[in-house]
Amino acid sequence: MRIARAIRPEMEGDEGRALFERIGAFLLDQRLAPTPTNYAFVHRLFTEPEDALARAVELITERGVRITPRDIQTLSADHSPEDPSDGHADLKARTEGLVARTQMQVEGFADMVTAMRAETADFGRDLAASAEAMTTGGDVPQANDDVVRITAAMLDRIRVAEEKLESTTREANDLREKLEEARDNARRDPLTQLPNRRAFEEAFAAQEAAGGSMCIAVCDIDHFKSVNDRFGHAVGDRVLRVIADALSLCCRGHLVTRYGGEEFAILFTNVPLDQARAVLEHARGTVQAKRYKLRDNDAPLGEITFSAGLTPVEPGEMHQTAFHRADRLLYLAKHEGRNQVKIGSASYSEFRR
Image (cartoon, rainbow, N blue to C red; front, side, top):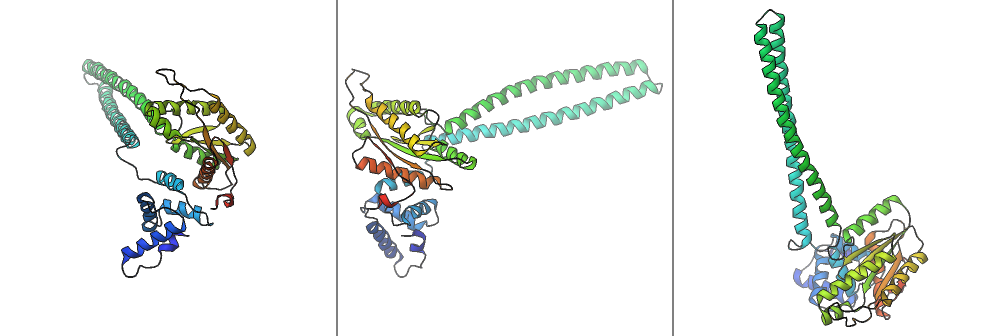
């Protein structure tokens, strides 16, 4: 069902009822339960048909593929408005503050240079006047005294300017380091220290521009909610860090990111699909083989595993399209028993229900 086409005709009669009926028809067609989350998701599709979210759903459904609750969760996260209470907004505010300070410093440099040019011009005029007095038979001793006085004053001004310049340079270097840190933090997950979703998307775009092949893997820790429920979020956070370290080590040379929650995304570049799968299978086996214990009492935590979906990126394919295909393969791996890697190409046929 094409979202844009579905709402193009003008509503007749009760617009609210017409919208409600179209939303209900879409939920029924996609075999989605009429939950508040699903209703709100579809409501946004029909009321904002030109939005990136509606276009992304259109790409998935235009070949007769139905979206799943997991698709709704992932797409909603991808296209959610920025929450001013989250860390990203705070980071953005700090970065904007650093940029403002940098702009003020640039303006301060300009003012300093302008003042020095004016003082140099005054110095040149005073020296020229003293030289003219000497050559025209004026008071030479007085002219000499003026030259000494003017030169001493100029040297003093130069000393003050150099001190200001040195102080401003130190501040500029400090600001540069803080800006670099802010840029890095904006692309890094604070818990695992892995690159984040933004870094993944930027790397995808850069690789697409450079050319070469890509494969995308989406990995999700199996039964992670039960870990949090049984042992608490502190233990869950440690599990996330352990998985992050294992993926980084096993997939060295490729971009491993924490995409969100217990989900990790890996960008394989310039390697064939079977090699990417071998790397991912090695990582899966490494994680499964570890014996995890609670830090407090050495009690066994139980087996930790992850499932994954892996797909090649077709030439010219959008990031969202390839990613959601990998995410669907992950969903299939979960559905078929977890702790496995599912691979698939650009064909959507294996996901029809």
